Image: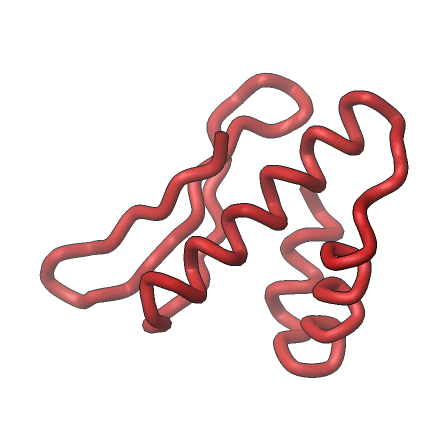
Length: 82
């Protein structure tokens, strides 16, 4: 299960999840609202489960990936590396 962490002194958020190798990983998403960070965490969690089980992602996650490729290219490249 992916979770959201916030640095107290800066307010920067990161999404922490267990990757395909079972190790904890984090993707720093910056200074965004908690709701947006939780949405990102949900999609990341779903992507990890899909990759582990070799199944297709749901439509909302595929659409989200398309949006972040144009809106947040840095986040998209971080997701591609996981």
